[in-house]
Length: 206
Image (tube, rainbow, N blue to C red):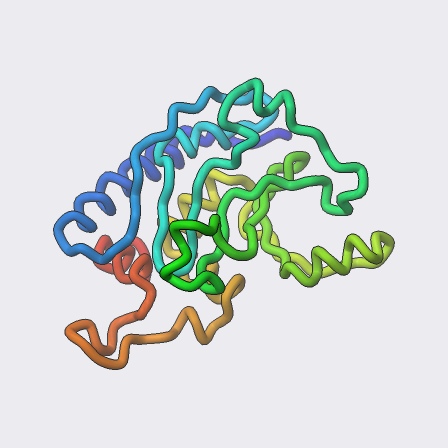
């Protein structure tokens, strides 16, 4: 893959994380931002370990992002194999939606439907779980999926820590979830999604 230098975007993510961490400590939105994960860069996956070296986990009301277990070490990556029966080529799960998981079970369950990283072209994409199952059963049929970003660094910089976050919510969870607002309490009228409220406070999204 010929990709542009991701260093400037990684620096932007680092600065955004510092700002978001500070604002979370000040305002207590209830999001999770865990410190860097000690990962070694993998030549086959440019930018992947590098972006997860900036944080070990980020989580709001609607999504949880943690490093795929396959990249936690060079040995883990060497052990990774593509399932020949997987019509999508055994993509890596880079995060999961949480909307389908009851809040009381989120400590026990990794999350709901995955957001994927294609290990060949390194695009980040979303695919409805039913579409994935259909592709298994009908490998010669075309199925719909949505490319969220051309690479993982762009995905996090623009879709998780930037102005593309509302569109990410709408794509994965629907416009009704994106636009839902709190109806009562001291935050009545504000967006129900605590990650979006944090991004707005930081001036990173609307």
